[in-house]
Amino acid sequence: MTHHQLARLLPHVDLPLPLGDGRTPTPLEVRPDISARLGLEVLLKREDLLDDLGGGHKVRKLDYVVADALRQGATALVTGGSLPSGQCVAVAAAARRHGLESVLVYSGDEQRRPSHPQGSYLLALMLASEVVWHERTPWSRNAELLADACDKAAARGLRPYAIPPGITTWPGLLGSVGLGLELAGQLDTGDGGATAGDGVRRQTSAREQREVHVVAPAGSGATCLGLALAARMLGLRWQVHGVCIGGGKASVQEEIDALRQEAARRLNRPDLADPAATPVLVHDRWLADGYDRPADPELSAMAEAVGDYGLLLDPTYMLKAFLGLRGLVGSGGIPRTAQAVLVHTGGSLGLFGASPALRRWCRERFSPYLAPPASATATTAPTTPAAAFGDHRQTGV
Image (cartoon, rainbow, N blue to C red; front, side):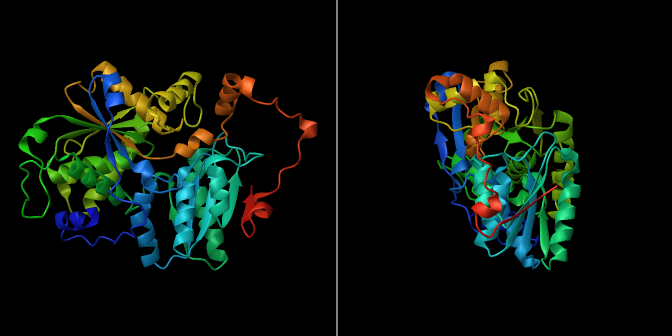
């Protein structure tokens, strides 16, 4: 549905036809429980329900990216991430679905392969054709490591297609624009709304007069930018907030600015290049100790979200976004007269991850209900993923 809307808005752009892998539209829930706690109307956009494997909004981006890969004749998808990466799962699942190979490259300054697979990593091992590890390797080398994996795949006769972290490669941004168009349609009450000549349903004047603040996690910032671009195309005055989950405000803003310029060029819409026309407010006040290093207060808030709201918020992405929403309302960054939308981008498997901070917190909090750790001499050497999951290959550096 949103692809047809995009085509009407951009009639002179050659848009790839998305594959339609995810369940859309995803629900937009009115949350009276969160609204009562924060003192304003809060809605939850459930991108986490897009698929069954926790890929969430990344599935919507991959809808366009994998279509482009197939159009180019690719035979393998190559991507990278850290241990809790939901993108690795989503890419490997998409590759399986469409008859492609997948190569997953794991790296990161403090990343080490675990002795026991769980959470996203367990699913990744079940789905991937090949897993490559670069333990304790600077994240800044990610692009280099992906290029090396592509070269090795090509040497084996494959036609690799690289997908960078955040799925920032074109045309993945179109998935986030589609999310924005879908959200706009759901926010429209339909009372008195007029249909414009381009077939895009406009919101009522009363709705347009109300402030809408959209909050989402910001790794690369692509999701937030897509939402802002959609609002611009529809003439809506949304304020989009990106809550940093890894990099700081300056680096995320730089990535958003570069993506904005590319989008304006590819869509032949010079007006979209103006940051004032498609603003994204980036916040890094809720980074705490950084990516995949949740602090105790964050993990306690994660448990409260489960108990108070029945929400599964992973400690790396969505918990920071939720804390950002709460903090922005408390500081006045989002006025209580506004309507707030929290975009749940997925990644709930992160609750079951293996980060040292999460494992330590769980042991301290739930120690009466857990067996004591096994001694090093009593443990059995783990079975390699390649042996455990059949024909999957694993290499390491």
